[in-house]
Amino acid sequence: MEFLKTCILRRHACTAVCFWRSQVVQKSSARKISTTSSRSTVMPAWVIDKYGNNEVLRFTQNMMIPIIHYPNEVIIKVHAASVNPIDVNMRSGYGATALNMKRDPLHIRTKGEEFPLTLGRDVSGVVMECGLDVRYFKPGDEVWAAVPPWKQGTLSEFVVVSGNEVSHKPRSLTHTQAASLPYVALTAWSAINKVGGLNDKNCTGKRVLILGASGGVGTFAIQVMKAWDAHVTAVCSRDASELVRKLGADDVLDYKSGNMEEQLKSLKPFDFILDNVGGSTETWALSFLKKWSGATYVTLVTPFLLNMDRLGIADGMLQTGVTVGSKTLKHFWQGVHYRWAFFMASGPYLDDIAQLVDAGKEAAHEEAFHCEILSPSAEENVQCTRNPCTDAKTR
Image (cartoon, rainbow, N blue to C red; front, top):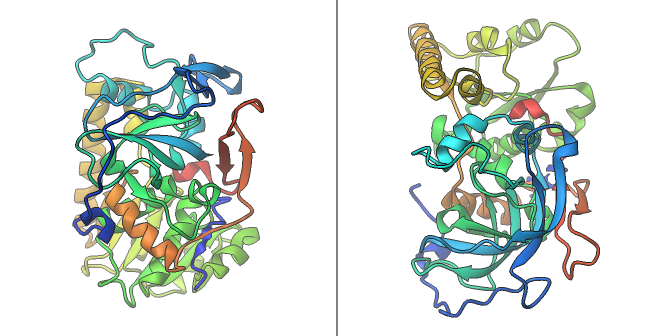
């Protein structure tokens, strides 16, 4: 089956855990970090020193190598990293208020102490060192992960992450291919499984509508839904219709070919809608759900971070709570469920995704763009993958 090997390859882009998480590995207590220089305490990285446009990006050879602060952390030598729309938005300052609150809940630090800030969320590489409480990984393991946006990113030679955010890399993928999946896969998984409540046991025959189906999250979601035997209707532009059909979509609608609502009226109601577009879509999309049947609408386009950037922490959280609460209650009385979903970093979820990848039910496309992000003089240059067709609105 070519299902998973076409989202990574195309991604130009918990209870249960996989068997290897039940195996405790023996690890050496010695600290062994391999850098481009055997005695170096610094590494190459792409960083920003302030928020702005592309001009704020700076390549440095002198970023400090990360160290383990907590016993559940691991240090990964980056073999491949990728660029997501969230990185572009963060470069411009999107979400800075909420992310700084997460970095410094007590407001001890002064403004701007998050800099120099390394961007990049996806990573595929090799474990170099493990904290004392890490039991499922050992130095030398090939792993992949998606780093939460409040942490230092992956566009560097090394990155430190929590052990519960890491998973063993799918054996069937190269590092470059693997680096194109974690962030979009976990975002889709959060929306479908954690928030939407869908899984391989309750999806058979369900009618699913995916808005913005040709982006990174959308293409992954198509493949998961089809692996779970759902009927998938994908909405995208005409030039992406061939792609989503190859990924398994049963019906494909071109949002540019006419009134979207009129096209959907000719189809049966849906059990689940995943909205990667946002904006005006939620004003009409919920009317195409099956009423009083547990049908659910999940959107990944929310005002949460923007509210906090615009209004501050307290007022932003209050406005967000009022917005989601009122919409949830309004649609509940109309017989459908309204939900927001967000990216969730999770090693166990990546374990499940890796199983789908190795079973051939999720895919990565070789058209994924990759480039060297470190200097040509580096002993082992990190590779960066980017999905040219990922719509920034899907974040």
